[in-house]
Length: 260
Length: 324
Ligand SMILES: Cc1cc2nc3c(=O)[nH]c(=O)nc-3n(C[C@H](O)[C@H](O)[C@H](O)COP(=O)(O)OP(=O)(O)OC[C@H]3O[C@@H](n4cnc5c(N)ncnc54)[C@H](O)[C@@H]3O)c2cc1C
Ligand SMILES: Nc1ncnc2c1ncn2[C@@H]1O[C@H](COP(=O)(O)O)[C@@H](O)[C@H]1O
Figure 1 (cartoon, each protein chain N blue to C red):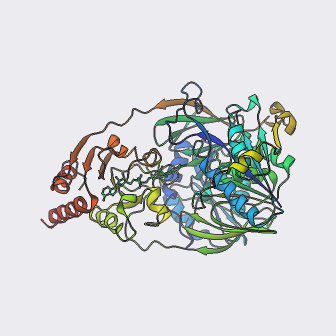
Figure 2: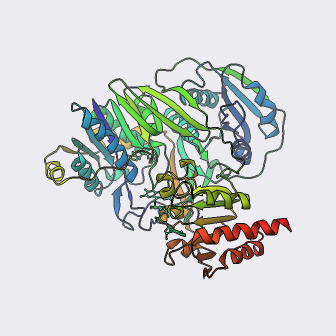
Figure 3: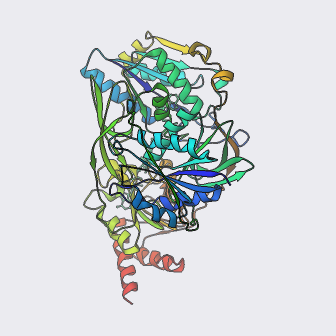
């Protein structure tokens, strides 16, 4: 079985995340670029299945700038077998439509039985790319999974919607996305880091994937940013140290603000 | 005025979801609201009057046996058919798990541009312009779609007001049975909320607890204060991970974003990812033992103290006031 994990590079959420007001795009120089934590969890789902099923091949795929290399190498060091990096200057500012088209093309070249993605990225936060990829590939999707069981012919799991939980299944090939209810990823071990250097690492351009933006995206709606404004930072107010009366003082504060 | 399709979400019990008034209000801001309702055969007609009261000028009832069994694809098929029937100026779904799934597959199918998590909408010429609140409200961004149809997912409850009531024109259509590409729903595990507490999304007051509460038993203090204030219960990811409270209560970057009148953070350090979900609250109150906790940087009223002594005193003060 071949499992492909989609991994996206995002600005580290522990740093300040900056939008460039002139382009409306994420300023990737403003914070460290890391592989999104949720995508590492997605890789963990694939690797733990591989731990128990030796015939499983795991491929990590990412579309992004040159900085993606580091993240994909980490994926290889954790235990993925090969990596594909889609790198093309024409992709700067790609929206979810472009991104999903390109990822679907990459998946067609790698081949797959199961695609595992994160439910939503921490920068775009769209939570739509996996289902879009599934539609383009003509396969079922099950997104936002909180539990997953993979088998040779399908995938079963639970997903929460606003109104409760659903137990769902899909036949393979399929695309799934997982939530942070699934376990954190393993750390790469020294042996893994060493062997990662010898694993296949493909860099593909749009041309390599058979995509000519002027043709492929003709007549396709594209979302674009018109304007970006930074909100003023929030200031802190009153701070007291409890000396036995803070609960009462807080009640008075709430009364004064008509919050009681 | 152009037609604006709005995919209506229906509860497991067949009623309209709470997101409906706001979604139809959003549609009415842009044009003539067309409610698209996807149900098992015969189940949709009962909703028509209610949709009319909420401003749906037209109701498109798409019905099929597969609704409820096939995940998301019946809704995508229904909207795709409605797009042909109504030639809409925009297609709106709720920015929920299901709404995003439907919007995603539909955008890929009809080559539409997809705009996600709008908090406001307007037309500028022939373009729909959406407003977004990004990175936990740190930025306001406006976006639009160029060169193709527009699909927008609208944040739950973000757009207020209500469209004028009308008597809707109803169109009924049956869904084809093409199903090759769908996942299957095996079971609906309906966790009906038994609590009388307000829901987190859209709540005017929220009391959240973090790892500082220490245990599931002691997290009850958060619930007691919430009840005294008539507030919803929230939590940090650390509190959810520790099993103090269910995932649905998580506030933050990967949880719910709230913007209440009052947000009370108990035993929460205020990590940047938590702040991303609550920093647009009107008034923020924080109680934390650690004077250097970052939550104090954004608190209007901060108390350096132990939640287990301050909060019981606060509850008592609130209760003695209400008895007066
Ligand atoms: C990709 C990503 C996404 C994330 N998404 C989210 C998210 O959506 N929401 C979220 O909350 N976090 C999120 N996090 C996690 C976040 O980084 C923090 O780990 C988390 O918010 C910490 O929760 P906490 O404040 O409850 O715990 P801690 O940071 O451990 O803080 C506990 C606080 O309680 C105080 N305390 C202890 N005992 C008492 C007492 N008796 N009285 C008063 N105070 C006391 C301590 O001083 C401390 O400040 C995310 C992280 C990542 C990497
Ligand atoms: N540029 C990308 N490269 C690889 N995977 C991606 C990319 N963008 C999105 N994804 C995948 O889609 C998931 C959801 O992303 P999004 O729809 O942007 O929130 C991510 O967690 C990734 O698994």
